[in-house]
Length: 315
Image: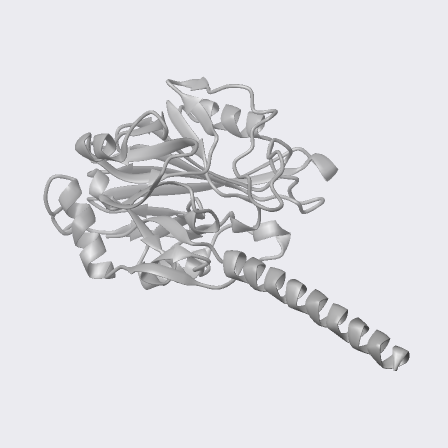
């Protein structure tokens, strides 16, 4: 009898432990793996809305288009991409700079993975770009990994949970960093903000490196750590209204590219002439797409990581 009671007690303990572990596993999966769609976005409506925020529909391109593997030119936009390699051996860095000039800021678009806003909804940058007929694209801020931040895309507010320094594009072709906890979403929209990104930190402000990056942390989620060390990077910057610099740095690949620290990344944007610049999601997310192909080499393995959103240009 005593043996049976002991056995029953052991079984109950094991059952309780398994139930607890199952609950933890479900919560982790629900937080980081299971898709939660909050809004489904019609891509046609999205593009129309974005044109509208720039002060009316932009005329269709009517001129000749010139393009090759690294350049694109039409009467609406000019894109020039350069691959840059510096250093050698373990100190080698490989990065890609896209110099972009647009006739009208409405050419600068954003899109969600699977045309849906929510958490844990991902697709490769190239897939989202192809689905939207993008000429050029980079990964965005991976808003779907967190449940905080201000998310305005194509003039529509999707999330209003101020938490950090954000970055905004405006209908007049300018870009600016701002404190999400000091500027309301209604103020942003009234000022003509078309898109916001919530990652960071701000790299350049008024033509100067924004600050000390040694203790910068972006998230309080599981696995967060300081992001100052050399890593793959994606960043966006403004040289002047309607003149932008997009940079993707490869990294974590010995002999090919170690990545950049935030200090190095900020200095690069200053050297490029940026008056404003912002750090977007990096690591395995860092991807640059142009004319049907991935330009860079994510993590030196050529494998993209799914992301929740992109910034792109299309005719």
